[in-house]
Image (tube, rainbow, N blue to C red; front, side, top):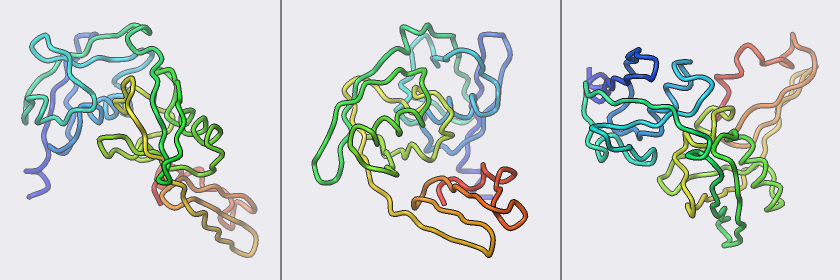
Length: 202
């Protein structure tokens, strides 16, 4: 199918010696490859740096611009906290108002979003990288480095309208494109724990 033709398989040789095959769109970034590895459980307890032929791969680069193709192999090496330490970047609202934010690359994506909301005094922000990657498209528990952010990068912050829905005994609210929060009678929709992962970017 055309879907299969548009997807590549990238083989990642992990520090443990195990080789992990990751299938993802050819248009994906190196950072998205890292996301897939973390989400699959192949990488736990440490940050990972990907390289090919001895050259480190930029997480923000597309697979193609990094010189990769379907069936290629890259190596993964553990990185120290220093290599994934703190980064400073600017968070900019469409109005032009901005703020400087400093965050540890080992911290979660959700922590960065919460800090941006606090500094800018805006709730329910959608953050988008210079490369056009919406951070809310990633698992909020993933470390920040998987988004490919570097020192002096900028994030566009978009305030999202909030929607509210209700049944007779339960309520739900969510910012457009964000996570759903529910409460009330679990049997009437007040508990979405079993489908929480499916309710992102609604």
